[in-house]
Amino acid sequence: MTIQSTLANHVKAAVKKAYDVEIENFEFQPTRKDFEGDITLVTFPMLKTLKTNPVKLGEEIGTYLTENVSEVSGFNVVKGFLNIVLSDAYFLEFFNGMKDRKDFGILPPAEEAKGIMVEYSSPNTNKPLHLGHIRNILLGFSVAEILNAAGNKSYKTQIINDRGIHICKSMLAWERFGNGETPESTGLKGDKLVGNYYVKFDQEYKKEVAELMEAKGISEEAAKAEAPILVEAKQMLLKWEAGDPEVVALWEKMNQWVYQGFEKTYDSLGVDFDKNYYESDTYLLGKDVVNQGLEKGVFYKKEDGSVWIDLTDEGLDEKIVLRSDGTAVYMTQDIGTAIQRVKDFDISGMVYTVGNEQDYHFKVLFLILKKLGFDWADYLYHLSYGMVDLPSGKMKSREGTVVDADDLIAEMAETAKNISEELGKLDGYTEVEKEELYKIIGLGALKYYILKVDPKKRILFNPEESVDFQGNTGPFIQYTYARIQSIIRKADFDFKKPVEDAYKFHEKERSLIKQLQLYPETIQLAAENHSPALIANYTYELVKEFNSFYQNITILGTEDITEKTLRVQLANSVGSVIKSSFGLLGIQVPERM
Picture 1 (spheres, one colour):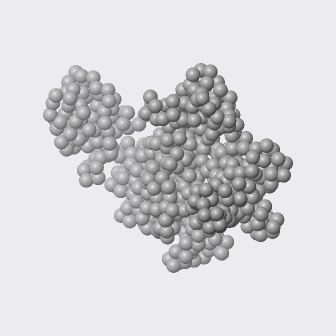
Picture 2 (cartoon, rainbow, N blue to C red; picture 1 turned 120 degrees about the vertical axis):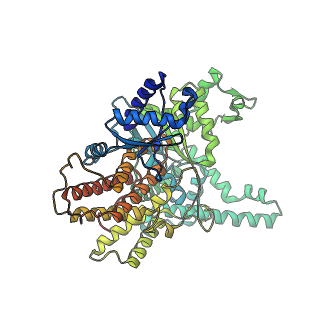
Picture 3 (cartoon, rainbow, N blue to C red; picture 1 turned 90 degrees about the vertical axis):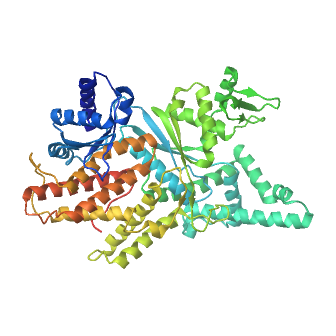
């Protein structure tokens, strides 16, 4: 039982005794730092029922708690706020119960718990992953880890967009201009090689459009439609859809290059998937469901044979789900894929990690699935996030102006190296150890910088600012963890034994324990809100609290063995929670820095 639950039961009894009235719900919050106390009961909401003075009410409840609850040692009342002081015995009992638990705050999934599938990354196979993908990947991976930690079973997935005109553009450009080059012959990662030909297609296409406009004197729109290279790419797509052996073989070969490249990037980022779905397998899914929906009256057919759904009563518009020639649109595919996933996995919900430009699409998708009668449609969530901007402006793949994910990861490690060398922090490290540490710091900086921001907000990404060893950054938190490990290594005595009763806590020790207490609740809140930012910023607050503790009281220098034992235990527990919380963000912590 939490302290809030214990206090609520006793507050209920106090009110019943004083006023003979039953009140069920009470509002507790942490006591403000400028007042004495550990937890505050807000009495204002109770006044509607009790018709009394807030100060008098606070005094009556506070007196009752002090006399009847062993965990309460005192109180003070400020207007409508009852600030409750918890006893040292309470803090000691809590701390002794959590200090050796590596899984503190983590809930195992209940046996009957169904899974939640988290979709993220879902790239196109015509270009390498870039900075925009990185935010998507880090968010999706972290949310899956947080959902697991909160007592759910999560499954990680992606749908790879491996078909369509954009894929054919890369294929055609390679066929025309590639001279048979391969990742092996060029030394390039496969996704980069294919991405180069996507850019090459766009360059040739623009050239042809300009030539047509000049030669024929036609409009840009007409020239874009007539450009031979685009016409040929469209013919290639038709051949692929018809199963042309040569086109399919080229498609398979180039996609395989891309997949191998993606795997290296995912490995560098430290993320994984339980199952990959491919658009080439799923693009026909959903057509049968639409036909069933037609029979039920969920959809209707227009004169040209196209199939639509009317969502105007729900404040949306009409949406096409099958073209007049019977071919599927993205919405059809997404309907079919969702249904297939529920068949493949024992899941009751899905989280789609997709940028906020698709907000409307997901509103429509979820509503259609609900109208089709799927009860799990109530548990679908669009993890909508803002774009990542650079100081230089917006990125464009076809023009080759994106920040490549692999280049960014390498640049982050290089930035970490330069700053570490300036600070002179790595004496006594081998070159191999240094390189590994640069990767951990650089990647930690990147992940933390992105994940500490509420998903809905846009991010202006600044690599140098992210690798700062001061302030709300990954390296600052990693450095604090390493400092704690240094304290543990220097503790030349057995500090594992629990401290006995009657320990009198220093104010800084109490503050640190109170911050540790918030960890389980923060995991649950982060899971409910699908927000790694809550974990990131909790960890920063914990680290700030620890550094205040470290700077204000001596840990290993005290001669009192009981104090020394508790303080080393406290440092060790903070280190465990940092490691755990950063694990939920997909960030490693170094033992030394």
